[in-house]
Length: 220
Image (cartoon, rainbow, N blue to C red; front, side, top):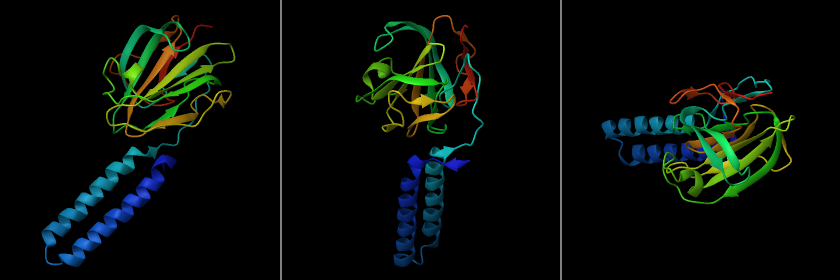
């Protein structure tokens, strides 16, 4: 387990701030032992909560052509057919994963391939389960093309709490299956748009692990 690069600066300055605040309390209120202890305990809890937001487990990347792996830790909240009207312009099977604040927030490539399309959309911050969040919230859209020509669309969606989407790819980049392509600070949602003939391997409310939970099997 490591700390993700997105959290290192924040965690450093948060530690400085909490240490300084507790030092000032001890300096000005040396006789208020109860409140000093409360402050110290509260500071530790706050720091540990923020720390866990940025944990980055070390995993073995999968290598299974024809299998689509989860792009994020979380819970399956949508399995349905939907028309993808931004790039693919066709009906697809949509699988959506909700990332809560306690999940790992790293986003990983579901397949091995080349980034054929990528676009960032500024937008609103509706709650992730709102019906319009996938079209009106801040989001990114990425299309990965596998060696056999299969295209998978992956969409990062910000929510009411998650207001920082990060990505590390551009069009033309090659991605390994399970390779890190982005990060959503404090959780939110990731959508997958799969071919209609893909065999879905997960069910509603099932927990997922990024690059470890098989989401679907593609037809040869």
